[in-house]
Image (cartoon, rainbow, N blue to C red; front, side, top):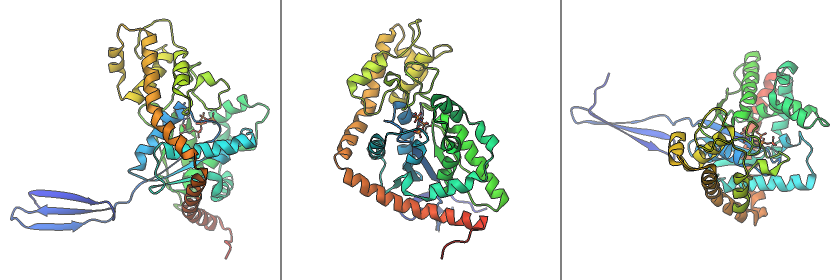
Length: 367
Ligand code: AQP
């Protein structure tokens, strides 16, 4: 083993490599240039099934921005997923643009991350069809989101709703993602994506990276303000149950002040206090304070004071997002240009994986 008295590592970000300077006991300097670091990849998507909520923001979007600095990243507006429930065409078109603008408003940089609209990259639907044939009916039947959504949309229990997790597997596997930042509600779908990838890799040969879920420590499941045993959802028919990321400060304050709590009147995190636990999670995500500190700060104060503080923290958290969003929405031409460039970059990566899959399955590829 070589002995040395000092070692300095300088990261060469442009070449993604490290230069290591080693000072030996005899005063000689050695320099070593290490191989380029292989950056890990992340991918995540959001459905334009309504205006995103504080739950989507704290559980997923906020992490996307942070992770995009350290990973090769791709983020999509999952419009194909959204038609598993009926959408009004004019409203849907508007929502797709709005959610795309939101991705830029949260601070994602199209020069650093691939930002695109799912239906602009046909490989997603193509791989999803192939993977359907490597997925068992029984395993799909166990998906809790399918069970919940079929109850909520009993008049439209379509095959797309059933096969939703396979399309999600295709989204992830096309980009060979190592990590998928999601809220807790998507954990089961991610496990299926891993199972499908493992199955395909075993039947043929290693083809897909096996992805891991990235679930933030805080905010992984923000609950409804009106029923804190239920997840906050953008398609909830009761708008008082969620804070939308585009709500005005007045509306945010009103919704948080009318959140369901309990009658005990003391702020601490505990069993049977779902409403307060939820508000504490929201407050913690926005301020960075832990639960003990929050309980200490609000000791002897009532829920009125606590709700006012939560409302103010949420308003301040969302204010810059809303301001940037308003300015992006003034130039939808620019948004479409960014989306086109994103789709081009995404297609290059996705088609590489799709061709590999098609060859392994035995399709004849076009010349
Ligand atoms: N309440 C939540 N708390 C934390 N994270 C959440 N996410 C969703 N709701 C919460 C995360 O947000 C990301 C994007 O979600 P999506 O739009 O792709 O689908 P979803 O999970 O079905 O979200 P919604 O709001 O409930 O949409 P609808 O009402 O259309 O079904 C995901 O990472 C999700 O985990």
